[in-house]
Each structure stands twice: as structure tokens, then as C-alpha cells.
Amino acid sequence: AQKITQTQPGMFVQEKEAVTLDCTYDTSDPSYGLFWYKQPSSGEMIFLIYQGSYDQQNATEGRYSLNFQKARKSANLVISASQLGDSAMYFCAMRGPINFNKFYFGSGTKLNVKP
Amino acid sequence: ETGVTQSPTHLIKTRGQQVTLRCSSQSGHNTVSWYQQALGQGPQFIFQYYREEENGRGNFPPRFSGLQFPNYSSELNVNALELDDSALYLCASSLPSGAGTDTQYFGPGTRLTVL
Image 1 (cartoon, rainbow over the protein chains, first blue to last red):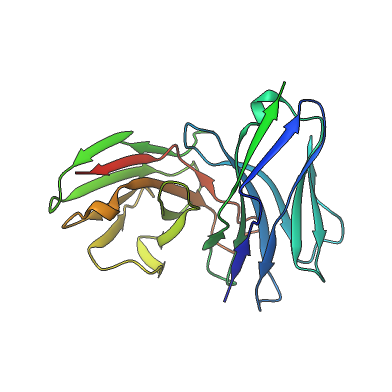
Image 2 (image 1 turned 90 degrees about the vertical axis):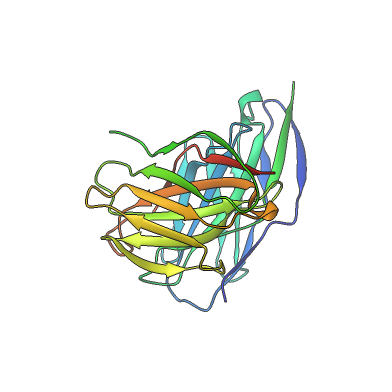
């Protein structure tokens, strides 16, 4: 069965510093996708970054990068140069199983960026 | 490109009533998924529709039902509302799995309160 675990309920980071949000996953499928979403207090889930299980390089999207360690089944999100607007809930999600586009979400991490 | 839209934004119902939530998919997306997000939790998968057919279902009772229309818009219907149905309901659209990208793009959600 697929499962996503986020062990950090809340995180604080100083503005302009980098922060890592942890995510571990469990699946028996050889092909899967890992995603990170940002959810501001308004509620909308905003897509940030995607990593495919067969991708050789870690994904990057602007200030977001995904530290993918397949053997450890971890997919941590790194946000560089934090901004006040980064304060939000962050969810790690996994697509599975193959041929069925269902997402499994973690419980989320609340990030607070301090000025 | 038009994003995912949902209506209404907020809704208040009483126990035992029925509710219909609506979603318009992102342009070009023929797969739509619905999620329930209780306060302080990650989204939970309800079901998915592809080409007007249900393409998988999560652990939700039959009083949760859905429809997808030829223009790929979708409805979520909930009968016999219970207090625990109070949540944010999120709709997400995507290309079908295997189409090269399976990122789900979410709408702003409908916040349902059951009294």
C-alpha cells in the first residue's frame, strides 16, 4: 500500500535562509511520481515540483528543489532564500498505482517564515 | 489557459440534507479527481472520473457520488449529510496517467459546513 509520511507538523525559518521539509514514502510500485504542493490559508493547493521515480537528477523549479533519495524512500523539499510569502502548509504527495492517477497525501508541514 | 474552478466557495447545510458541488477542469484535461480535506489534515481521495466513467474510488460510502460531463466538468453529490462531512472539498484535473505528465492541478475548493 502507498503511504506518505511528513514528520514535521511545524517549522520556523528566518527570512532569506534555506529550509528543508521532510517527506518519506512507501510503495511497491516500480513507477511512481512524487509531488509537493503549497496550500496557503486561502485553501488552494498550488503545485510546486515533481520528481519521477526513474528521473536520474533531482528536480528543481526556481527556489524549490527536491532532494530525492530513492534507496531511502525520501523526497525532501528544499526552499532556498525563504520569503514571507512562503508561509503556508506544504504537502508531499505520491501518485499511484500505475494507470490510476490517485494521489496519496501526507499530513503536511506548516512553515512559518520570520522577518 | 483556464485553471480549475469550483463553485460554490462556501456552503452551509444541515444534517440529512443533500449537496452538489461543481468543478470545471483545466482546459485540455479529461480526468478529474475529488478530495476531502478535514481541518488540519491532508486531502483524502474520494473518487476519480475519466471520460465520464468512475475510474477508482477511495474509502467513502455510496452517499458520495459523482458525475463527469462531456465537457469534462464534474459534480460531487453528497446525500444524507453528516456533521463529519464538514470539510474543504477539492477538485483536481489532470491528463490521464501515462500521458506524459500526471500532475494534478487543484481548484480553490468548496468549504462545506454541516450544522
